[in-house]
Image (cartoon, rainbow, N blue to C red):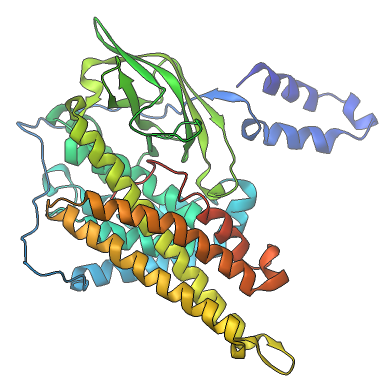
Length: 431
């Protein structure tokens, strides 16, 4: 902790503050110190070491091309979505308001989420997972179902699987042996894909974070923004410009010297406990470079991350729709339900129409990505629709509730704030 937090701690133990009635406020400052600008060393709770030797990287197989555009979920997908939806309704939705206020998930919630095995679906059986085929569509359906409960907590739940998915897709045999087994155990590590930086009109393909070669590997310098679960994360995948040649991805453990975390509460996604990741002359071994620094690997990461945010937007949009329909049918004005008013009915219909369009484009892009087909156009369309129509849906939800849409008694104001993040965020999730 910084010197300021240490000073506050000493002050909290002083008897003098009782005489002036300041014990309560000072103790509150101590409790929230790490949320208000203090920087702390990253979490260092485990040592990642190989538990097995791999002759070659383990990859998930590409599904067979059925030649048809059919997004009907199969039986396995239906079972997975049903399970995740129940968890989101029973665990995430009731905890969302408290997490939004306290900037953190309730105690034990993320551990229970890890028991769902969200990460296992994307990890091959050779590495201890349950996956046999690449499952981008399944990942999209899971993200959508979780976001229906709460977007901030959904991001917190999905953050570790973004790292394990990247390791499976592009990690070499040593990287997989070192890190992936931890994601299949009982205590899945907090981890994050850190691409975003606090830069106007940020372009993920032009990161300000710099990486330079050293005799022993690489050195990273820069700051990443809005990293989910940053304070507790043990492993990061960080983007950096490699000596002016373009963006590359690096594996950074929180225990590395020069890694510090600063809390960064935002307008939305507050349950994800977002923070800044500071990298100051962080030395990494040569084996920390993910995917060989290839440009096409980085492009794939950005596209799959944006598809993840589109799926999350669809989940929140469905939550808005499911909330406003009974509201406008039950709310009366001038002796009849407000849904009888044409403007209200059309607004609800617009939400449903835009939501279906967003889902269709997102799942089509996911299906093409899953089968190894070109999906750049579809991913760009999904990103555009999620940004524009997602915000439109959130705004319409607030408007339909009138004054109730402005107060925290109803969740639509939180969903509105969360949906504003869709057009801003890069990284954090990965399908």
